[in-house]
Image (cartoon, rainbow over all chains, first blue to last red; front, top):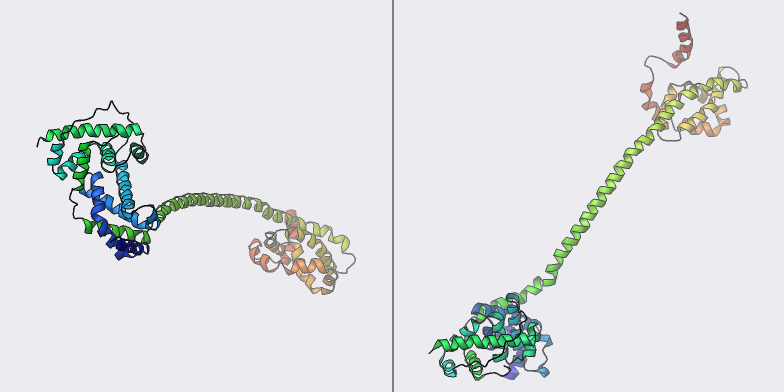
Length: 177
Length: 215
């Protein structure tokens, strides 16, 4: 499987359109799941995914297998494209975090809640807060990395995370399943 | 704050379970279009035309201004030229009559050497060149030479051609003066002459006028 992916990537570097389509269809689910987390709906996710794959095919010559696997490289491309979309549509103002209180959330509620409903709750967050929460809680970015990606301070990143937790706590507790 | 809470880990797991919409075909078609687009119309060139048009617009505007300025200068300059050229035209006419007067005075002293009426004509020839030189200073003077027909000197010129021997003695003035002017001037200024009056009548006219005055 990995060998097949390597061969497809080699063909993609030669501009083989069939190989490009094959690579796209092989990685569609993986990439679409990432785009869906950052987008507010399916159409925006599709738009993000299209641009991300175009960028990936155009810069596939720069992919270095020794620096990481192809999935990780594609994930960064999709996330960067998602953040570009978000930055075009929202403003990240520098804010300082309040006294952080650990929110209490009943985990059983989350476990019993449908994945699509959870995703819908996350999408209801303010755009910047949504991006910071997904980057930190889902994709494992640190506040320093988030600050660098979004051109904000680490304090602002922490403030957005705190806001996301507060809002989600209220919304999840309100589910009362 | 800096640690991922348990419920956030649960949310992450839930989000991984989110079903992916079946939009692969439509997204691929858009990807193909975007991949084909750069080969036909690259993004960079798309921006260049605008800048080129702007630059062309500025250059065109500058060019138009330059052309208008040149045209204005040309016509204004051309408008001054006629004013400058007018005087020369007037001068020859003024000079034309002058030469007519001097011939009779100057020729007389030179006349003695040749014999008969012919000598007087020959003597007039050297005087004529001096006058004609003034006229030949400009191209406009040449047509004015047609006036020679009216002037006594020019009337004398034809007979001078008969005396080729004398003309050969004075090569420079004769050849230059009579060779060039005849064709152009005669046509242009024939109208200045009085119809019905021949050269002979003009010569005699002085006497006639004096007789009239007496009458």
